[in-house]
Length: 320
Ligand code: F6P
Image (cartoon, rainbow, N blue to C red; front, side):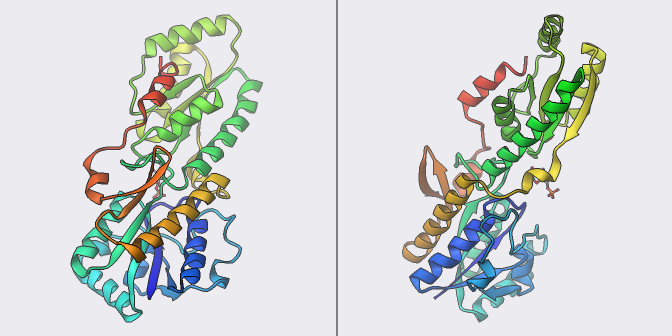
């Protein structure tokens, strides 16, 4: 019996611990594990290698993914999916574990409909924006990387009378920015999910400056596309010199946190159990209300991910 693992879309810390656990648990169960390098592109190009302990040795503490990832356009074409299927068939692989986001899972569902290859998707993105799960692999490490960056910027911000606009990742979702603003003690937050009241902010900051505030930290989510505007607003409306600091891809790197490592182990083990015991169309493993479960891709796609209302409520004070 053979099973393979691959990564698709943006990498995230936790992928390597998941790959390691996938290989070790497969060996424990007497299943032959394979590694698909370069994501869906590698599936098409037959970059599929039998896993060995050596290939996954010394990777648990490393960010990114040792089997690499890709965003594939070719996989949307049936002729390329057919080649991918032939590659798997020639090695006797009929089960896949995929670390990625909802786009990757949709591609795999199509692949299942075309050729009957069962799979389980492990939600993996630092954006933490997949509907149906409270947690996506990698978000904890990213939040810790952001926390360190904000703490460091605070040192320099406090040494001048300046406003720092710090942009976090999050293509469409403000989760990283919101949690970071709350847990780093920022004064201001801009996310797509909450409308800012700039008049109220101006009043608040002017009053606080009168009372002795010397610097301001504002966290802006990438998806809000507001960093430069907010920096200009500080200069023009608050009368404070400002700087923009885009944290960027540093957020995707870093040694996986203890929490991400543990979750990677659980996700990988439960995915293999599911594929071996009872594969069905509930293809995505989720973590909801502190419990693991499996849900269908239709369910994942049925709604847009929403940040929990209690978090939004807590963060509102930073938007006005
Ligand atoms: O993986 C998610 C993410 O990091 C988003 O936060 C960001 O918008 C995007 O990927 C960046 O993608 P790329 O690595 O292709 O620049």
